Image (cartoon, rainbow, N blue to C red; front, side):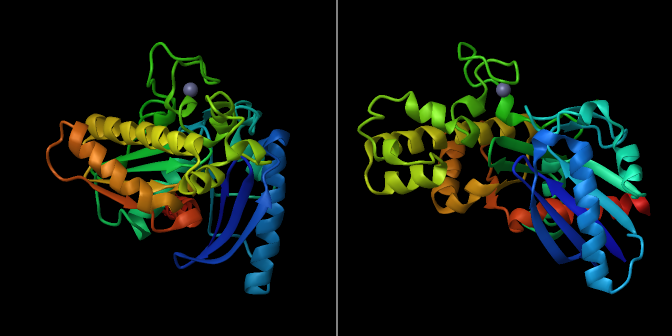
Length: 313
Ligand SMILES: [Zn+2]
């Protein structure tokens, strides 16, 4: 039983084949998300067809197909309500099933990427067997997904528990691209980082001013070398992410919080800080586990594959 899976991000799309719940092939292709979902589906379908032929030596249809996407996706109706700015902008106006059918694909399932990642960690990774778990993805933005009593929380439109990064941290703060005010991502996220850094006192004297690319990898590296601005920024970012974790605990009462996304590489620095903040500031006076994601960048592929197979059965 081969399942075709893809996890469409803003920069890259991970395309894979799952066989007996194991990834037997993964390719990363440029997302070109500004060209829209229709184009992405065409290119992904071509990769699946090629990879399947390479894997099995013949062309047979996939048993199931799973696609994880950024944005607000209703996992029951399949309707896409919104995507991040300039990424797959055509998606809300398209019927994804029809797009897939147009690319020769049937039996497709699609869902939000954070829901897919949590499903992967729940079945095969850091949240295995934990029925009340939350996943926080610290990547370009701050994503989240919530599982209550073993069921993904979705709400009426798929939004529930899904965009903690666009919850208000400061009601008197700036207006965010999403339309809300003072969102967490405005104070600590990769997409906002350059604006943040350049707006801080002492930017010109900071080693970051000489960097061609301002990303968290550089910020953490310069903080480790004693750069004052980088150190302040690291401290501030960790403070914001800690508050995000604490808010999620107060809202959803989890047993476990899994930290994923590219910034989870900093887990030795982040996790102790999150635990200390929660212990100090949370009303929850019992122990809440906070762990690094176990499946890395493949959590979404494994999760959406498992969900697609369930739907097919
Ligand atoms: Zn926002």
